[in-house]
Image 1: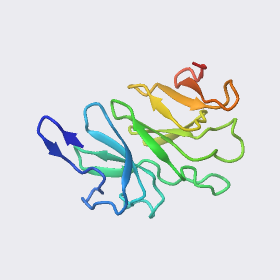
Image 2: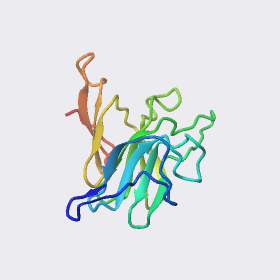
Image 3: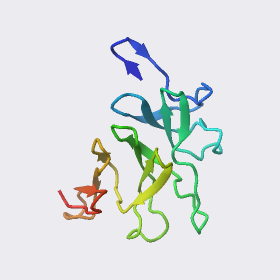
Length: 173
């Protein structure tokens, strides 16, 4: 993180004890006050998870703690529900971290998509009924998610949708 006012740069892809990760880190996202930073890495920066089992981390720059927000959880088929987690994006207040996983969870794409939200307050993960083929973004408060998908219209083209977390509706934009 670069503090342009104080002209200082801080490494945030480190464990809570300050150990630097062994692999590169990508896709950073920062809260509006700069306290929380989310990033992807294959490095093991959280002692509570096994090597290579976490994809999205949260660094609290104030407390100097780094945690895995995509800690492995298994469904009835013993499939790691957050395997392949990428593209972490944090809400402006730092409460919500949205992330994507590769592919559908299980075989029924109508029940669950490939987008999840982690709540820093409750430490819970909620699956969203959204399947995005590639890109997504969130509103500052984390209540709306814009995403692309090929399901909405012209064959082969990506269409834009906005999912409203409060209403559960997904209008085609």
